Length: 337
Image 1 (cartoon, rainbow, N blue to C red):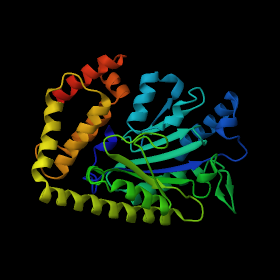
Image 2 (image 1 turned 60 degrees about the vertical axis):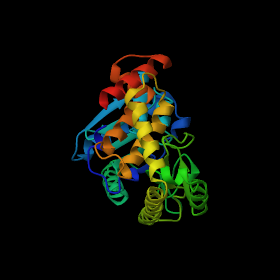
Image 3 (image 1 turned 135 degrees about the vertical axis):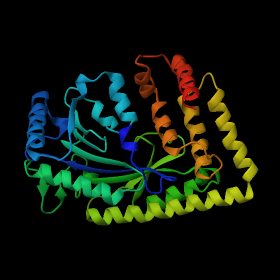
Image 4 (image 1 turned 90 degrees about the horizontal axis):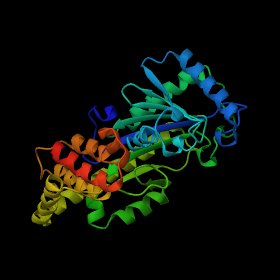
């Protein structure tokens, strides 16, 4: 997970920031309506644009149909591509920058999905980089654009800027104290949405929540970025204040919870991915609260991804039934600890 290598701002709460732009090519059908030949035409146009764009970093091109089902799912688990990209493997592909901070997806829901992914709170920097890549490509691609509505997209909710930005946040104390439901309700009321770790339709695991904008029409990109950033800063403050309060009022209980999780992870011989995420969340909370001092947050963030079913199988280089995965997962965790 190269994208996790750089230092993150406010990474005790914010695991990652993602900026994504959706674009389509003028006079080409949306991916859901395209034939295989038409999808290949779109892919070639984007390949040519990438070749002419002279982007400063090196990008590797991958066709989904050339990847094993295990590799496809592992890329999703690592947050490098979306689940939707692997649904029609003979039509879709992607460019991945060498440092894994940028992915350019082809023929997902739209012809182009540009994604910038950074650890910590880097929304402004992510938007700047994504905008630069967009400008490079727009020199060689005629985007579907309306003076009235902005960028035209397959889903009406993305029309306008075509921008979706999100932060993955770890909120164990908001969950423990029962404040998470009121927070989610408040966010929905101001035009933000809360999803699971793999976006729309995915479940909440390990107290990780993806907070993103809902509206892309009627606001500028800068306004969308600033709105989400101001909300995330408030969420960070709420979570940190609750951590301090729990340390003051329930210190022994919190220490017991954290060290029980550490013991289970260190000595378990069989462990499911769901249980692993819950226990890793407690370990992360322990590190963030200063209860655990000799384990790094990034090591846990990487393990949370590595212990997912497909990433685990890719790590060991073989397909496994669920029972075998649970044994190997426990083995890997003991080895890492």
